[in-house]
Image (cartoon, rainbow, N blue to C red; front, top):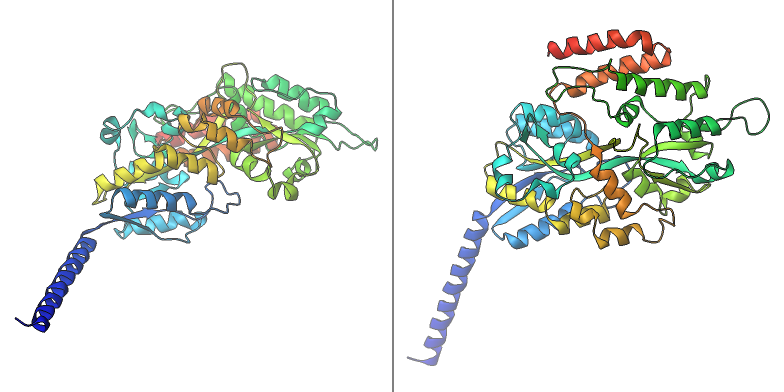
Length: 435
């Protein structure tokens, strides 16, 4: 056999090998599971965010490296405002994502209609729910079944104009302060400061009747949504507090603009807002004219959990054909410490894992230049999240709460809470029983 002939045979064998390897690779690529994810752009908390997809993209990259036979995809550019409609359309068309973030106002409906997979059996063999803050974990429960896992939480705090209180010779409130402390400070600072006979300094703005209800540890409904408790003593005390705070300001409606201008002592603020407006550059545009910080919300007494916590959730579609892969990805998003640390580092809310919020990395992040000496501490945040409360998850909650808010707000505005509360209670209970 000539050298030329041997050379041609080797070339032919090499080409066959290349073709075989190429065919195998193509076959394997064709066999890859495609996992579809549903996400929206931007923050869950309606604040500026320059890292729209950083957390999810990093998680996907790690997941695909761990699972080479799975490709994770998502449709980018969907705004939070449009996401609920987009998700509904996908579900109706039978193209729902395998794993998706659940719109806060849609969780009850999606759970009750069977759109979300029951996670209980998967959870029981994978981890202990105690790794999460209780309020965060409960947000994904409907009718005693876990249909979603928490991804990011956002507790509400009380923002304080430190300069204003110091000017009035008032000590800065600390965690554990009460609603009596809150009201007394509001009363003390509400005054005419320039002698023209017109009040121009105020106690608070943005403090809602729902926050007052939380401060007194009152429940508005039972867990199943069959009973309402709007005429309870605790609710009455909460609404009385709102009426008294409103009376301090006379006929003037104090606004957040007044707070921005340094005229107001207190403003409830979410952690996401704090983390957005405390450091540069948003700080310069928003609150650069006075010193400020945040503490826990006031409560009626020590031991009452008065911190309202909102939580973004991820769920698995009940129609997913890749349930095992979907569960592995969901765990990576919500239970993995590295992913959850990136949630705290690159988003504005908090991690839902206790271990992450108690970590040195989180403490260092809070101490970064730009937050200043009045920044929150790990222990304060951990305390807030540990004592957090979440809203009920029965099917008609959003509807009845919208109605209750309308009725109670009108009663507060018209100063008729005492006379209207009985009829409000009856109206809400009638709607619950007719659901």
